[in-house]
Amino acid sequence: MSAGLPPGGASPGVDEDQGGLRAALSGLTTRGRSFLAAGIAAGICAYALGQDDLLRVGMLLAVLPLVCVGVLHRTRYRVAGSRRLSPARVPAGSEARVHLRMDNVSRLPTGLLMLQDRVPYVLGPRPRFVLDRVEAGGRREVSYRVRSDLRGRYPLGPLQLRLSDPFGMCELTRSFSAYDTLTVIPRTEALPPVRLAGEAAGYGDGRQRSLALAGEDDVIPREYRHGDDLRRVHWRSTARYGELMVRREEQPQRARCTVLLDTRRIAFQGAGPDSAFEWAVSGAASALVHMLERGFSVRLLTDTGSSVPGDGSSGFAGATQDSADSAGLMMDTLAVVGHSDGAGLSASFDVLRGGNEGLLIAFFGDLDEEQAAVAARMRQRSNAAVAFVTDSAAWVPDEPGAAPAPAQAQERLRMLREAGWTVLDARPGVPLADLWQQAGREHTTNTPGKTGGWS
Image 1 (tube, one colour):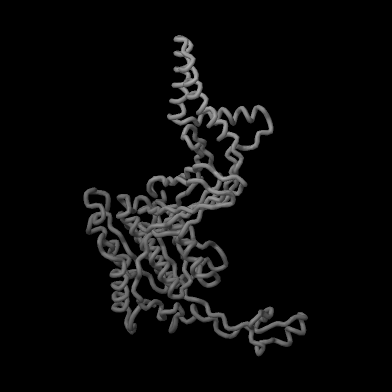
Image 2 (cartoon, rainbow, N blue to C red):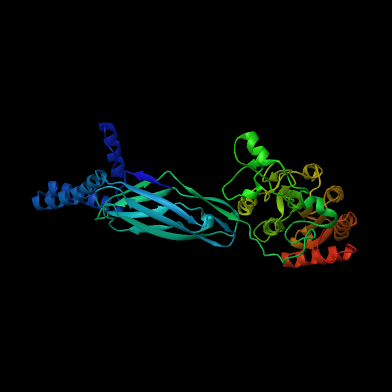
């Protein structure tokens, strides 16, 4: 954020100057108004009593704030402000620091400056700073901290600058137009290195090898790039195209992972940082970051059918994009995701049945019989599927009737297990890392011939 700020402003016309003068008069402080009122009252009393000395005192009291208004109004210095966030993306419950910088780009020193940044109440109190005289060409830097337990995107700014005369008679407020955005992403939990898809690096083996390797070398040539081995030069293509061409190396295809987040409003009860829905959002964030770090191509999918990073050639992130950028894109989505008004999971099932999705990790809310059947069919389109299911009866025990009966809830979990899901009953207070390890053990037990992990 950077902008120039002429406190007095140019006055090419009389009307504009009078308008600016009226704005300056409206900036009189309580002290300035008191001096002006006392001067007028002293003048009236001096006229009534015939006291010349009292009249001179009254004139002094009345003129002083008007002189301060005129001087402040005619000030011609310019200042520029900038804001820097460190970091611009912060997990919920963690602090970010905002750095403000003011530069006096005029040839005159400034007077007393009061700096104020506009901050949403959820991030903390509004920061205010007092900057003493800033010399011509000088700069001042200040900083403050912000923190939020609620994820979201929060605007910071615009920055406001309050000018004051040395006597405190008049104050003028000017605002910059630029602002920045702080993104508060869900909390993530470090997950243990459970062996997934048969290979820790995300490259499958055994019966899933077709998902992991491209097979034979790709003999289609490409243009020579600085640093390529000259032994890979494809001379026939070089002669054909008239420029140096090299053979492509073998392009391994990463194993895929889809993280499915159920956002249906009817599937979750309660609100706040400790609610089941926030736990599911945090769990999805932890899973996608963990899988990206292990070399998987990851996609975030919601019950509405929306997919992140998008509907590109593969719809997955990590294979052609930098993992950090991919994680940032999906984290930004999770920072603002909210409840959907949909009642079913059909839209997400339509996306999943388009092809073999590799590993499927789902975070479900309450499931009725129909939605449990839809979720069971999702298993057919994945090599392995793990479901973390939250039960509203456990998360909001004070609201009877808000969730299915315990027997019905267990029946839904049984339907998923019979369909091939590895199902974890997510309850408050149980760390996701423990459930993650339990999922690995259950899959190993239920999969004959496997020594560990999911395939």
